Image (cartoon, rainbow, N blue to C red; front, top):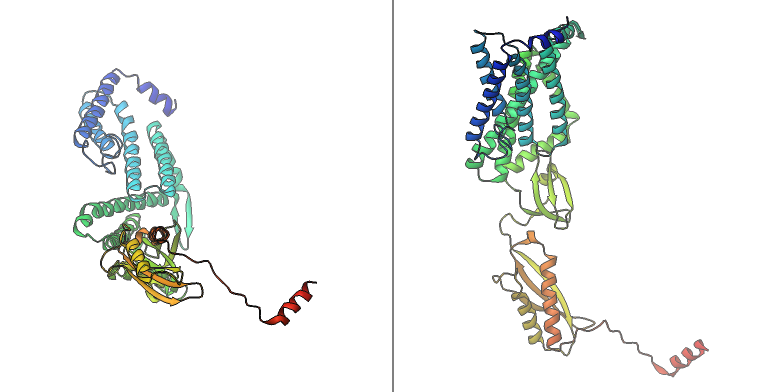
Length: 423
């Protein structure tokens, strides 16, 4: 008789209805506790998720209640159904934990979704093997498969256990760092850039410590990593100079706060708002929707214009040409009034109109005005001012001349030569 046949026969034992009612009671009790505790929890909670049973708490409570029921009923009857529920709930708890942490730490990441689905398949396969009783046999076969690494041999079972242990520790580390960022840094650190660098540093330290614990739990000799660390240091010194410089520059920018998220900057004639500061590069988004990825080393070693660092006010200039017979005082009044009546133009410093020069086509004026929100764009406010200038000049009857050129023909010889040429 196979393990599956034995399992199906055991499911028909007289105590199966009692187990079924006990399992239903455990699930209902876990759901009730989750419903009472999770009604006001945020949707990104790892414990509760988007729904009552979508988080880690429901399968964890159900697992605890089910195991308690096994201990109580085992004294009076045979246990089969509840033992089948144990691996199912364990797999569900692991899947929920991984899914909720990845959703919190890497929202919208395709790689995170792929890892979640891969782990889900492996967890359910392990649960099925556990239920049918084939898991010990599979583990024995995996333990017989060895791989040689230098002078040592490692079994496939040890490698899988190490990957699972390291993965569990790293996921728990990501959860702890995300919880610290949301509950501690959000209240303690108000500056967004400083909060980001603190969260990145905490996550890096926790990941390193978690990885070391995972490797130690698997049985890896950590003293052997010193050689690897030396090799990595040499590689950073020679082959990864630019990469290391960008990473160090990123931390310098975040600590010094010379650039902050939300600042309007100009880098190599590209002007935009700092959207994000990564450890290797800074993402700048222009008002036209284009995004520029600037290496952090460039922001440290070259001249960068930060339009939001000290004073967000900037000067905007627009030029206009009128005819020579125009009233200069009236033109200046129209220009200044056009700037003052535009919404985004500030009153201090006040707009000013200046006569620049006597041009070839007319009198050239320059209107200078200040705005305090350059992140909302300069072209749009300049267009609004120009439209009001055009309307004001037309209502006042002031001529905006076309380009003019005078052609003079001197003497009869020039006329006759011109006639001969045409003939």
